[in-house]
Length: 520
Image (cartoon, rainbow, N blue to C red; front, top):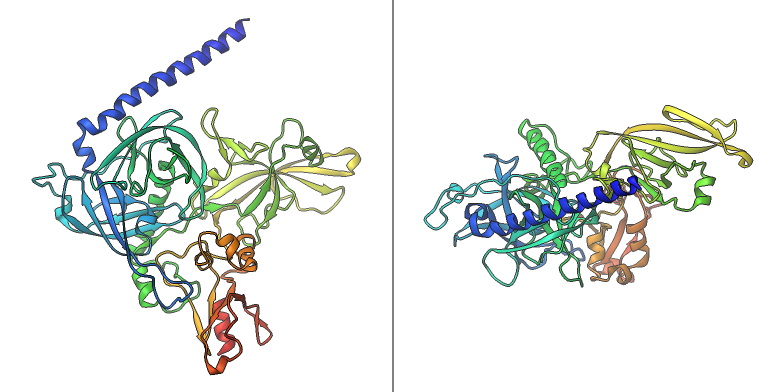
């Protein structure tokens, strides 16, 4: 019929447009290496010397090691307005950083100006003016490349960098095969990422992914282990959010506004922390502070009072210190976020037919910004249940003798503070020694000292605390007795290690500082 014919024509037009765009992008991508030497001058090799802490012996560091990665020159909130964008894991726990331009043999000292470990991004500053100048070998000075838009599925992308297997610049190409929220291996955050079928190997990290218009559409940062040609790129919405936050922090520092201490409540900074404050540490990305369950089951939706056209996810937990506390409740149905309908599987519309998890909408917000949610809540008939703010509607559930209520709730978002820190890059671990007993806050880096399979080899009770528990008060830590340094004063206790300290002299302790106060 006519409707079916129109639908087939529209589908054919979309396929034709996609094919034409793909061919055009393939041609443009292939031209990057041949015609744009000045473009390649903006891609640099990053040389880093790292020294990570030893969490079993927190008073010392592990031996130095050298690695290399890639970076790209972009407009950034640094002195001079131009810096080098790279991955945070390329410069994590760094003691010395150098960069080298494509086609040059000279390495220049660089410093970490800002770093965001959650999103695996960092900005380097190079103060040596000769790095930015034209040379006899490198005829073009490194100019900042512009940030483009997120590419579409099947778009051609060119990845430029310095991967392992050689010392010179490498150029590979591939197509966008998937765009969704992905676990960032370095910072353990769930953020938007682009999956490519281009080869992304160690050393590619921090190199740009260039689109058809030769703008930066992302930054290479990881690949999938035990799989062929599955690489991941950090898209520009995440990069822009990071750079905007860095700019705000930099302006705040320039006007001598106070910045958060490395350790909450600490009055005096150590020499190490003074060094750390020279670099801007990104606060992280926001979340609602809730856990959710899909509502695919029809019986569940009926029980929750959802009508046939309503969709959403069931809230199974609201974190006590999360931004949603006091606004959303366990067993609420989250139906909309900022006017976008949440599907039964927890996704929202992204672009056209594409869908991503609703957490993406929250990740783009900055701390303190407001999110508006629409929820449906079951309340006892005639009860005094709080109905939140905004417009609401109620209806009876019939035989269930309860009614449901839909209303909007608005509140400010903020990054989630875990009970057990996921990472501790660029800082020394805290510890306290008394009578040979070594106390420290539990962190995932401490558990990772038990090996790659630490989920199974580390003490189970501590792993459970790290993965499943959440803070109930600001600044709360899990304090452990890490080990006992044998001495006459602690004879008989030498075998104790990795035990959680719940109380001292009968008084509960919720941080290493509280333990120190109780002991002394």
